[in-house]
Length: 499
Image (cartoon, rainbow, N blue to C red):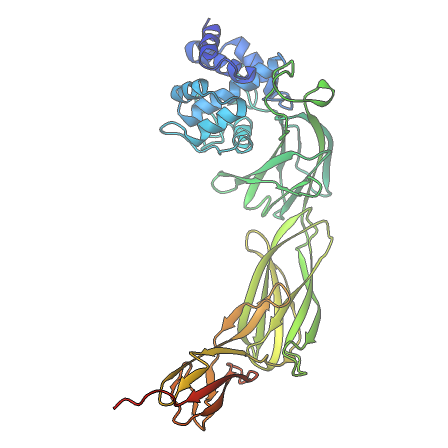
């Protein structure tokens, strides 16, 4: 009765709602009024024991009723209780859009579970798999059991697991409907990083990696990194078997066609009249060899045209035996054992395929320069270091700039002269880019009438009529001088004298 009465209320408030939301709210109403029942348990367990079936497609299966009940229970648990469900039911937004609207404006005392359906589904998937007391990763009002053979609500079944790491592990042929779930467990690591890869047969797959900290038992979640070129997902867990005792991989298919009733009338055009599904293979292995870096070449060249090499292109090679790994690459420049410049960026490598790239360096002064490249993993642990022998690189000339207040003036009238320029040096990730752009160290003005100045912005008057040439040379910290730049100025004596 509570189930049907809940549906009548929902129909009155939101008559066009998708069936999966309507049925989930009705089953939740039944649970709130009467508690657990054999029918609710059977429906919920039909999904948790085969969670590859879709949450968002209603096809009249017991698993459809079970997944929608669990999901609506999760929303009520984390986003404000009964008031959250009332907000969802009265919202004219349908399906996932209504859920996202609720997540953006939850009730008092709510627990953050994400703002998008993908984020919310990830946390829900963690909750039905773990039922942890930690934040978004469990239920408060439902007790999900790992062993439900004697009755009760079951946790989501693990699709495959591995605890032997003498060789790479692979589990192929996992089929899943859009917005269904597959989960995988990994234990008994040897302290090396654990590399995980999901290879789907189509784009749209997403996933999350849950890692359990050995000391505290706390779980952390990281999204799989999805390759935009082939849809492949990868993850890396440091200290597997040491700092991390257990790893769970959650995989779902974020299909473009999502909310859908069984007759497909309200879910867009579906090719062949079937709900989207896909398959994937999971691979996992320990990374027993650290990532590697090498400096392959250092090529000097001349930027300023004085026939002295004042810059170098440094070619490096980075590789990792992980399926995919993000590494921090740090460059350092030394002369006379003193560090003068550093630069850092992040690179993704994997499958032992080397990534070859270049950086550029221009020194602040002439000297014998040596370079060091370090790579660190996402935990900040040093993986490898490469060093070069010193080689002489010259200073690059600075560039001067400036202006004068007017190209015509009167005798004894002040002319305002402005100097500037720049001294570029340091690492750059593109040819012609520099990490530093400093002002010149000194300014040398020839004012054209036998006077000079070392001020940046001198003020000068001329006592005689004539045409004069003002010139500027700037000097940088390395002692090099810029090319000469000049301005013509004409001085007249045509103004009336002031008595």
